[in-house]
Every structure is written in structure tokens, then in C-alpha cells.
Image (cartoon, rainbow over all chains, first blue to last red; front, side, top):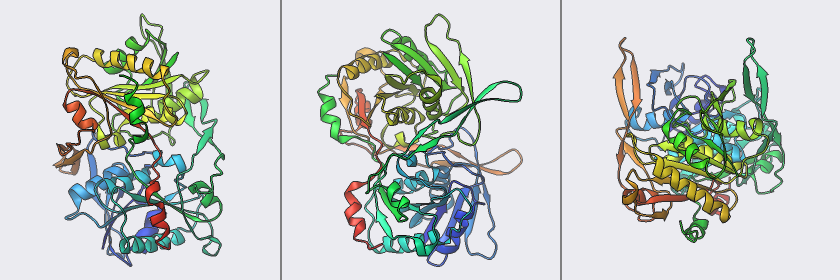
Length: 251
Length: 251
């Protein structure tokens, strides 16, 4: 098995290192990841600028790696269409340092990289750890390894990927695995208005999370209850249900 | 009616000007748009840097405008959460110089800005013109005006927006309006491998479109046939259909 591994925190982040260490035990791993943090870049691609591609040496390892001056989605496109001799069997993105839950996945570079893999017809998994504080990524990496083995024994339907969020808990306090749907995440007081040292105005995006989801089937509630959340994701944005309604508008 | 208008080609682009001119006839228009081109930025948001916000004067016009040092999605968030006294009645994004068809909407800053509006519970429309060549944006702007009036007379269901693609044809050759689904767009030879003047390697993303969609219900075929395509878009990425299947994996 050949796994393509990327992330949006950059190739130097601890989350991706935990994954290449864990996944090397079950597969040939190729890392193609951004040269610096690119979080909240969604599925952005770099079309108006060149993209730097440099080999990256990982010591005491059989992992091949490149660091890329681009977004997570650039990394997956570059790997599949330019760097690898053959498409990988699996695309894995993560482990993100911070959750990717509910509607927030729309902004996520981590999840978008996995969507890009699925767009190329390759089974894909995005993995995030539910904390921005320093924490051990090993349990999340070990679950990812187990999940990939299970996924390859079964069949993930086409045009689908898995979005995994792992609670920041010691392994003995994790409450099992829940298959979930995406919840809704809303924020308030999102922008702080400030003046720079020269008196010019700027805004900085902050945001207090409004904790208004209590849907027991949602990823948000599952992680809050200490469960590892696995959400199947598709990327067909057509709202088929209202096509007939629109046709009656007489446009 | 109050319309919030943004785009991803930047506030100086002709497509947004055509819209503020056309929409001013039916609504108060506020423009909050990027200070330079931000195409292919998907739903990226600026969280690690300050965002510059400067008033922008449009001559001979009642339109209020700001130019923003951020992405299209930043613009919509800023407008709704910081700049406007009250939320707008409609969010309009465009007119993009170039199509946003099929799976390409996943990368689109234009469509993502409209998704951001719908995430805030506001009816939203993304509009694109199917050419990268200089072309008259007026017919597309006039169709957008008519579409918004129709949309406000009817009811757009929640969590939905409309993605409009207008063929680059003179008005008398446009073949009507089709309600469509998103097709599939694939590319080949996407990356050109080059050396810079100092001999260092870089890649540049290009890509030849593989024209492999012949689904008559798709946006791609509709535009090819000279029809204005209107696609209802949702943003719930949960693949509900396979949740039960996943539960049988015994994770």
C-alpha cells in the first residue's frame, strides 16, 4: 500500500510526523506538505504564482518527502499529477492541530486536501485533534492506522472521504467511535477592530464559538462526549431537492 | 432591498462594476470586495494576519464601498459582522471573469463568498461569465437583476444559494435559462515543470480541460448549448447515504 500524506499545519508540524511514524508500519509513505502553516486555506489553489517544490529529508526513515510552497490542495494535485510515478492508494491529511467540525470543514485546508484526493478517485481521510494546546498525537495516529486498514478491507464508495476528529483525551478515557454527521458551528464577535502603530485601521478575525449544537448525531456532540468522530463527506454541492421548485420560477 | 456585493477578481474588475450599476436600480448596494484579484481562493479566510479595510469612493454613485485586504469570504464575514449596521437582504458575488462550473466550484472564491452569505442565513447568488477574454458584462448583470427580483418574489429554501453561469454570447443568441446540476470537470497535464533564472525548480499549475461531461442536465452542457445555467447549491457535506454502511465496519 502506498499512502500520500499531507497537512495544512506544514511539514514541520508534530501532527504530520505522528502520522508518518504510525503509517510507515503498514505502507510506503510519501509526504508532500506545505513548507509553512496554511490553515484556513480551504480548497484554495495556486494558479497565478509558481509553486516551489523541494525534496525534504526525514532522518532514520524510509519516507520520501517534499516541502511545497503552496496550499494543501496544491500538494495533493502536485503529488498525483507531477511528483509520483503512480497514484497513491490512499490520501491522508493531518493530523490537524485543532478540530475540523461541522460547517467549519468548509474553511479547512486539512479536509480540502482529502477532498482533492477523493476528486482524483482515491480513498481519503482527514484527521484532526480537538485541541490547540500541546498534546500527544500518538493515539490519533494509531486510530488513523487502524481506520485505514479497516477502510481497505471494506470499500469506501466513490466520491467520499472520511473526516475524523479525535478528542484530546488520554487513550483510556476515549469513549469509542461514533459515525456522525456534520453539525453547525456559529461564531460571534468575530472581528476585532484595531489601529496599527501608525494609526491606520485594521481588523483581526477572532470569534467566540456559539455552542448551539445539541444534535446527538453530530460530530460536535460526539467529540464533546469523548468519542472519536468519523463523518463521511461528499463534495457534490448540487441541491437536487429544489431543482423542480426553481424550474417553476419561470426564469 | 439592501444588496451586499463582492467578487474574487477584485474591486477594480469590470464584472463587479457591471453589477453595481445594474443592481443600483433595484436596491441599495454596498460593495465589500478584495483590493486585488483573489481567484481560486475557495473559502479561505484570513485568521493569522490583520485585514486592511479602506473606504472606496465610487464616483457618480450612491453605492457605498470598501476595499479589503483579504479573501472574498473575508469580505462577506467582515461586511455582515463588522461593517454593516444590519445584515443585507441578499449577497451577490461576481460577475466572475471566467466560468465556475461543475466540480470547479470547490476552488471558486466567487461561489464561496455566496456560500458564506447562505451560511449567515442570507439568500445568495454567485454569477460568472463563461470567458476569460474581454467581453460585455451587461447582459449577465441584467439577468442577475431579474433573477434577484424573481428570487425575492419566491422563497429560496434555507442553506441554499444559486450559482449562475452566463455564456459569452450576444443577448440575441442566448438560448434561455436552464436549471442544472453541477457536472464534473477534469484536467490533464496540470503542472508545467520549469527552472527559474537561477536554475532552481518550480512548477506552475496550468491544465487542459478534459471535456468529458455530456450529462444533459449539467451546468457544463447547458452553457455549451448557449443557455444561462442556474444551479442550486447547498453546503452540507455529510454523505448521509453511507452512514449506516460505515457503522457496520465495526470501528
